[in-house]
Image (cartoon, rainbow, N blue to C red; front, top):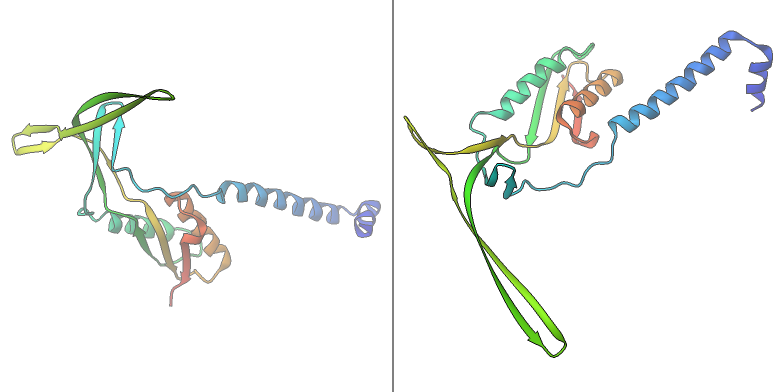
Length: 195
């Protein structure tokens, strides 16, 4: 505290400017920490079936035949290699499950209501059951289900190997870029120096 008083009493502009810069950097780090290090949401499994505004649907997990993982890795390598100081970059991505296709269904619901009375009063019970069949489209090439949406797999982890991966500034930039693009937590991103 005594040193701060001396700085302000002397009126040395260089010391005051350095103190103001340190204060602003601290504020920027606090803001960046809140933006980039949010509390992780609880992990949830993809829904097996859901109802959309368009009506009843079901979800089918399919293998990643179109090499989504390889395409994603290639795009990340191209982008991350443009980071100043990163140099040559290779990326490995781990996915949680295959691509999911949500198809429309005709859903038939039935409801039965049973009422039981006992000594204490009246008690009602409901029983519901549902049965669904997929909606099929006839095309020139054959039949196919009506696809409402396709969900790409969630990224579970990323390894980035870069020539400049030993530099802490480059490493931080690559981690932040991976977090921003892939929505993964910081502990699921590793940056390593290329040999």
